[in-house]
Length: 166
Length: 433
Image (cartoon, rainbow over all chains, first blue to last red; front, side, top):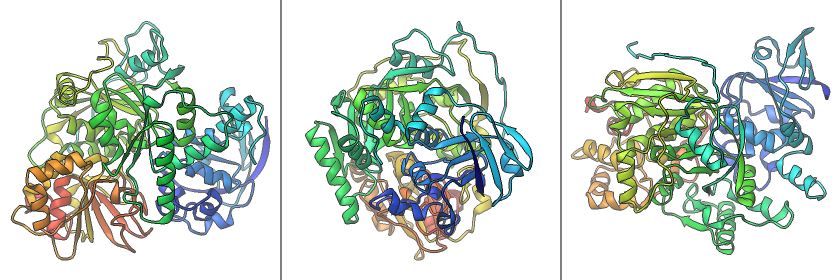
């Protein structure tokens, strides 16, 4: 499985969908137009500072609230490699998988990692942080296939022999 | 604290030959199998699917542009409802509405616009006990008030269901909420549900089903049951459900519909946890900004100055709440410093409030009565609040920036608390009037 090193952004518990993308910006035309406002009620500067391949580490219940699928889409559009949280809200979990955004559940990492630090993620095995390994569960293969295809629509296209959408 | 939460069982072993809960029976029926158990993944045929203007334009774009030879499995099972930005408030929302309108017409999809909040319309016209319903809105769990399994999904899941007529469901565990006793005067189902969420937390039943039972549940009207089921997602629930008992069947008959199935949970059904709440011990509460589970007795928040009050939403904009507000407003006036927005959940509710003279009372008291729609609860199009302003609301959420500026604050309370606060200009309970 894939291994990558990433810089960490740390957020708290109950990061809700209105924080990920406030209602006011949902009427913007594209996800790219919206992404600069990600997390703006909490940390307006954050979206501009995130670099490709960074990860977000959060507490419990990440993505609680609305079924708005723009939330995981925006995180994906910021080129966040994955979100690691103590737990995820149900609708967000489904929406993230459907949009090809990798989510990892881990109960301990949030309490030990510092913002700006680099961690090493061994998908489906463990996360290395401060020289210590934190085991992570493996996702079922059908969900991994959807994520690797880039989401449910891309997976459907792949099955139907269509070119992926850029 | 005097709240009593009783934990009876936890993490029992599940075996194949155990009885099933209502939710499990609905999933089994939709999957065409005899039995299911938590943790199983099943392909289900959906009984109905609802989508609103929050995301339908995205679903339509994907349908038109991204899949090969798209077809709609069963247009008769689809319902499109414009309720989030009604009437359209800028050219962007107008364009997304037009897209929805045109698509519904082209594909012969039931279409509603400006008639009310999607869940209220679904309950008034579609939901039947025993059905499995997907809605592209998190509060689709409302339909459990009539013994249906409603759950919220995103637009990609909706697209897949629209095209194939099916979806996959991970069978959730069920948590039993046994309600005993009766609510005291001045305490409402809204207080009860906020209290429960405060106790179990915003992810207290993540991925699980809340099943409400006991004599306290049986005594509740469909209006009350909707209040409880609707907010279940704020505790992380996948769905919430009441047994479709005589009350539900009588309501259904009044609305000219037949149940699909009348399921009861088996006596040996497995619950992953059981809680008991004694309704006599519940008091008026508010949820403090910015978390739905930060719940305190309302009297501890009394005196907090407010700028706006909102009575409405799919949680609390029905005739029962309109009557509560009218009773308190009669002969009184909204404080000069407060905007009080009253938004019936549907035109049916609006017409009944007109018939009963409630709208007149609202207008005479200085409230602003708006057309039926999601309004302030969704933080767009109507009544949004400015920098550092404070709103007390019967809406579903009080997230940071939910109703306007990121520095604004939202308190959640019952229709009575919201109305009393609108009159006083500060957070107040009805017994202070």
